[in-house]
Length: 161
Image (cartoon, rainbow, N blue to C red; front, side, top):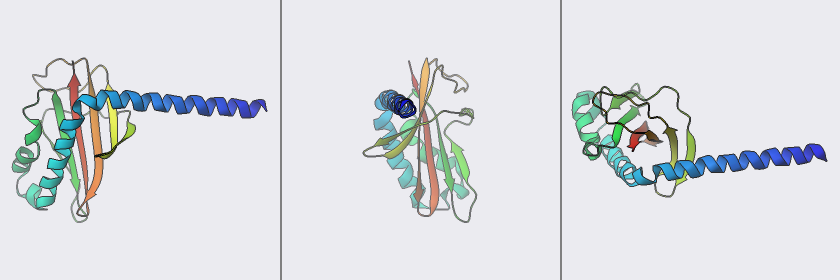
């Protein structure tokens, strides 16, 4: 009986810890979710228009796809991974000097409109690039989908003051 009680207690604690992480992730993305959703819809349209767009000119693709994010100063970086069946995965970054940290701890949450989101909170904010304003922490939101037989992964880092 004690063994079952210990397992029940562990399962309950693990479950509540998971809910706490999801609740925190949901709160941290709330101010940024509308802009991320706008970017998600825009990037899908641009990425679906022409399979050769990226190969013709990465600069033109970069200018077009990141347009909705450029005027927002709290957008610290954005990255798109686009891969096809017959082509290697290519990574395009909004800022050439912004790097996403290699190891992030992700929390999975589900949004009614966007579906499955991966969320990572960084405190202190460790996304670095030239002339970056100071942010106490930042949140990274990422989605991954298949679009016309290609993998499309969108990632955006937002700063919080």
